[in-house]
Image (tube, rainbow, N blue to C red; front, side, top):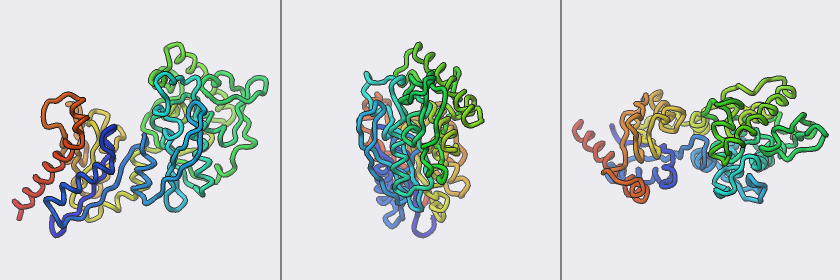
Length: 382
């Protein structure tokens, strides 16, 4: 490092303990203790799950806007979406259709709907968005996106021509789709789908079988939902002239992936890759001496579209050293291209409950260790 050191902090949140913004502040405090004149920039990161809209709004100098919507069971809820410069928007389905909105006893993918997500898309369009990114992590639904598209004006009809509500139980009863009143602004808008899973719509690796149980589905309900989803896939194929059943990512978010591909012509993209693009991250790395990223737990999944992997790859392309500060790590954590080191926050063998309770203290200590070593290395070179 020559002259004034420049650091970029681009961490994911450490779920349930430290937000990405707070992680950046702790890193900056440690950096300034060892390099008082340093320049620091915190770029909150997310990969499509809970907190993505807020992280992107902060990273891109955008604004969080609130809208009235409905939760997965149709109850009123106030939800936020992000409006960014140049008519771009990020809609996070978890804000209106996510699992955290339900109590354990309320989880039932036969009854839940993505209608609220569609309402947030409408709100973004009303606010002038012409480029909408859908972050689809954390859904409580398995409706194939029917609820979402109903909010945008689509009508799903049964054999008697009656309109269906668009919940999971209705998948088996759809025979036709009426798009006469579908919002015309959709055709004038680019849609991006943050999706890091490759599950198809139906079958043993499909939306219902893989994700249904965590949303409250029993084995019998999983079978019912999968059969219904197969029927829904046939109707989509007849309506749009394309078979969505086996497309990788179609099963994401209980089939909202397929719905977004069909109705919105959404382009499927890696969640973290889309966030880095929205934030113009490569430009932020120009002239930077070190980037620090991180997540709650580094393991074999880290390399599969997680924040740490995306940031490390961007740093490698820019020739910037990158270090990850993580809450914990498994023996199977991959050695990612572009990642110089991984610094776990735990300093002793301790129960998980204690590590979570002391998360901020341990993170601050890890940041202190990191910048102490950097200062030592700098002094040895000079």
